[in-house]
Amino acid sequence: MFSPQTYNTNAQVPDSAGTATAYLCGVKANEGTVGVSAAAVKSQCNTTRGNEVTSILKWAKDAGKSVGIVTTTRVNHATPSAAYAHCVDRDWYSDGDMPAEALQSGCKDIARQLFENIPDIDVIMGGGRRNMYPRNTPDVEYPGDKKHNGTRKDGRNLVGEWTDRMKDKRGYYVWNRKDLFSLNPNNVDYLLGLFEPADLPYELERNKETDPSLTEMVDVAIKILRKNERGFYLLVEGGRIDHGHHDGKAKQALHEAVEMDRAITRAGLLTSIYDTLTVVTADHSHVFSFGGYTHRGNSIFGLAPIMSDIDQKPFTSILYGNGPGFKFVNGARENVSTVDYEQNNYQAQAAVPLSMETHGGEDVAIFSKGPLAHLLHGVQEQHYIPHVMAYAACIGLRKPPIKQFKTNQPPQKQNIATKTMPNTGNS
View 1: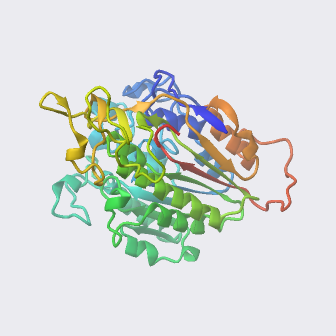
View 2: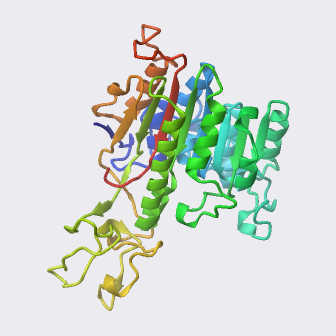
View 3: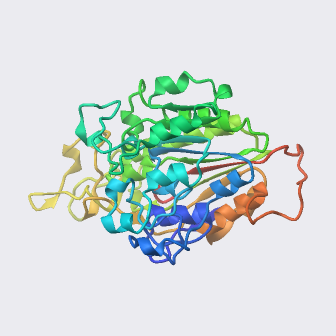
């Protein structure tokens, strides 16, 4: 078992931007920043230049491998953006989200960096359409809903620019599940899939006609990427696990984790442990607990078998240390037996009232299989992870002194599949 330490350079309890920079770029960073070292200061544009750090996705691309990003959040959200962007503020999704001073100083929004920093990322799938289009451009799926309109102030259509650049390179843009599955991966070299204006919906609420699941996106991504004889690197994020916990909606979060597990299983069926190092980890934990001496067979969303010996009221086995589930009724803790605590959007009780639940600061788990997976063991700093992966794949600065490793079936190519399971609680 390997336990990464998740703190940011300036935070005991981290955020997803700093942690993503650690496990993708191999450098600890300040909270709220992506793809820059700790010398960069959050929201201060003039601290960006000279402090950029590159990711394992870029190392793999530079080595001739195919690379991809699959997420259930926006493709320019904290975790995926650390793979390609250098930004002192994770919230600069488009130039419409940036202060005038930063734009005047030459800083670029994250959506723009997605297409410019590493212009030939082979597969990109997730949400985030609205950050790619000019301000007030109606969304293709929700044309009557202004909150989904484009947000860009520079007037650029980043999707149109990408489509024009890739039209002679077997590149395809899709925005719904039907169009995604109309493609034959054998005939696709580049794929851009933006399935929602912002984040994808929770798996329990997903429209199965219009939005693909995480497992389906992973399936298509690997079938495209694995055609490269030099191998591939794929970053997969079950990012809405985190959102479910922040909302205090444990059922949503845990069903997202189950879908992540399905995606991991599917990836395992499409790859081989002899030539693919697969790493599954979390960027941080949450203040999420599961207790109460529940009996075997009890619903994990149900009640503990005992009453509180303080207020003589029942409580659910799932609780949060803080968050929106804090509820007082007539000056006392809510009696949960009077509400539907098993419904999908029930907010589990929390000890401290907050509009959003927070991350936790403890070490998280990591699981790995494939070439050199044994190097991921013990307690290590989180930024150790990409150096192991690079060493296993013979890319970046971490090339081993020998060119071939003896296994039962020597690999002809070396693949790397990183799957982040952010914020799964106390794993």
